[in-house]
Length: 610
Ligand code: AGP
Image (cartoon, rainbow, N blue to C red; front, side, top):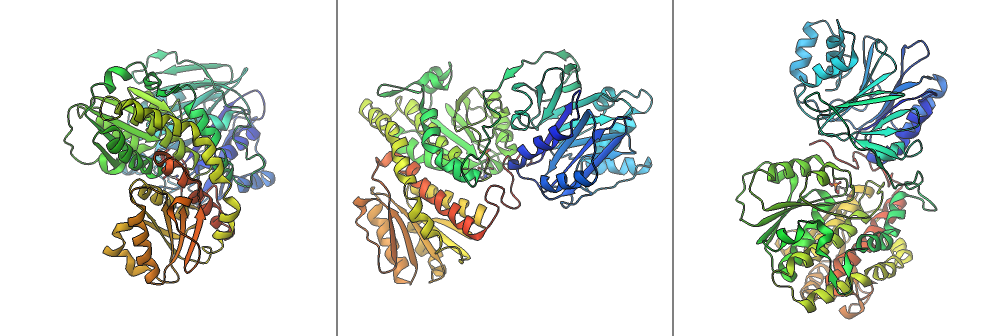
């Protein structure tokens, strides 16, 4: 999704802006640009479709320098990813803005502005904002007053950074619906859409709240709330090191993040287990009162996080004995609901800023849920701040667009939730002890699964020239199969679908031939014999099977089967362990295909628009 960086300093800000944009590349984007106020306080702008490296090249032939500036990576929504549509947008050489979000009333504003004589250079919704600020600046010449008047006229979501040569030395920042953070340096200030952009220049951050407008100069900072009151927002120190988002010895962030899973899971468990039980207080001080009264769970999330919710439904209903519903946020938010009294509303999100998930949470607050709980990897995110209870996954920064360690740590958090709520229902002491023991063994089980990488790398060669792949699983392994299919399509662009294996004969079996590899996840569990029958159905039609199974399943390679041995693990954690080989498979197929693994085409890391 789009990224913002801005700086007001006593040094040339162009290198800070470029490095900030580079550090935001993981969010996904298709053009980049920056504008600075030069030594004569004139606006100078450079933009380029494509990667930040192209913007850097453009800056080599057209250098721009200044002490105040704003920069942007754009993920196209309104208008193609061209130089012309890239931000910053400028009005009459006087005002420049960068914008994340979508302005919903841009058409009406555009009509009015055309009648007022403004000329449009782009197809974006953003351009109306810069013209409106320019118009509102006439008379007073005060940039802050003009932004305040403008945002009152906007409908939709925005994070904005604005500079003007008529009011130099100043950046005005504003947010509603899209995140924006202020970096506090020594005698300098910065803005960014997330802290990673600014880690080389500061560790001190102020997280703007919805409706805030900030008046930023090199040596001063004022923040006003939605009602225009001057407010103090706390300065928070980030624990992230500037190199925390580095690739280290790995070729891609995704591979690094796959290998970080044992550590990420150890961190996610730390302080949440005591001896043989799960600490309820890990969910917050109100957890006991809320969990002891629950009758039902409603989970809402998107993409990979939704798949985590699907696994949790199995755990909730089989282990905890709690009825559990799961729905994608973009559907949940636009339909009517019948809420059972005593239902906990659970959101799952890596970023905590996913627009649909956030909107669903806000909607849920008016629907009579008992409480809201966020499972999230971003402590300062809107989702965390707006929920009654939270459980942070401690995956650390996830830079690859394809979620890996975020997913497995979400599953760990959801298993902790299953225990913490299940003990008021079906889960007895022995059941809790068994889950806790399995969780404690999980990091080692994941190490063993990662050791399959060399075999999986070889297996990947069988997929590289294929156009389609089927993934099969049953029970809690069906969402694992869905996650495997999502990974493959996201980064290798091979069309992949997942089915509950029993559903195969009701249609998808028609697709099976020698050109359709079929991947199955088959740990030894109550359903594995049924799954084996489903695999026979595939084999009988000439389908080639790649099966991830443990030694207890009694399947051998040969005659159309390739079996990869996954370590034997407790049934409850099998969905987490079996996820890893599927991540590795997608990764190695994508590498062989030569795709952009960390920043796949058309996708964004944090989807902050609807
Ligand atoms: C997963 O690989 C995707 N990048 C995507 O499906 C992602 O999980 C989804 O957009 C939800 O993001 P969130 O967890 O940050 O809310």
